[in-house]
Image (cartoon, rainbow, N blue to C red; front, side, top):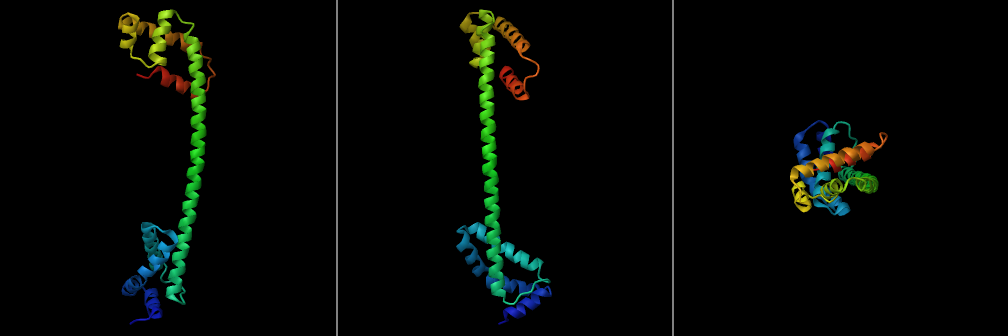
Length: 191
């Protein structure tokens, strides 16, 4: 049986059969180390594969005294790097979640304020015009349902809605924020 030192020397010269022998000899041991630290089968397998890939890529520049110790240390360091990367990505996900939650809360508050402003503006419209607008845009009822409910034709309901939208749009100030304009567009142009 060939020794680890001989395998290491052959590996440094680019001998593929020595690499295969090292792989077969140490794969199970390295997997055990990785699995013991991670308790995750697929990640442990990935790490062992990464260790062997690194071993092959850096074969000519490696200074190895004890192959088994060297491979075990490579595996432990790969596990630690993996854990650090996972911790970092979780921190990023958490901070993005906080940012997204805050943004959604701001949009909800802006949306509620905007709906209140629009409802107040619509209260100043003539009665039929106000009812058509409120039923259709604020209560999300179809124009056909609104026309039937108010006992008017659908064409008349469309005319009242067009007038209401024109009046409400005209009453908004020009320097309104982009977010509020977006919400208005979403509210007014929903089908």
